[in-house]
Amino acid sequence: MRLLLVFLLLGSTVLAQDLSYRVRTEILDQRNPVTVNVSTAGCTTLQFPAVIQSLESDGFTQKPNEEAGDFYIAPGLNWVSIRSLRPGATQNLGVVIAGRVYEVMIQTAFLNDLSVLFRFEAPRESKKPARGFVWSPLTSSP
Image (cartoon, rainbow, N blue to C red; front, side):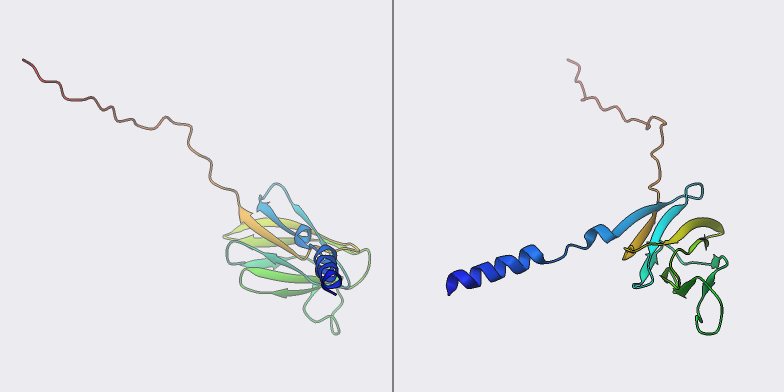
């Protein structure tokens, strides 16, 4: 009986799905759009490092039963959730943050990203040499 219990516990651990590969981090860069996979069966959430000023695009709707659109979109302060309304749909989404637009290419796929966590690129370190402080021990004169 104990052996059966051990096999059941090990089997459930082995069979548990690791979905971490469907959550990813991306760098926001105005010159390099990011592609995000969404599906008709699940929702994908995009999280941004600052407040979104505006979302710019065609083909997105918050009222899929009243307006035409390829994607359902639910925006928040610094996030947006998206679900595809039809197979094969593709559309770019301009996300405006602090007066800068960052393009995200939204495409319908069978397996969607669960979430994409965007971050700003880390500031580059200055190549100027740091002002140094030279220390020398006090010398005593005889």
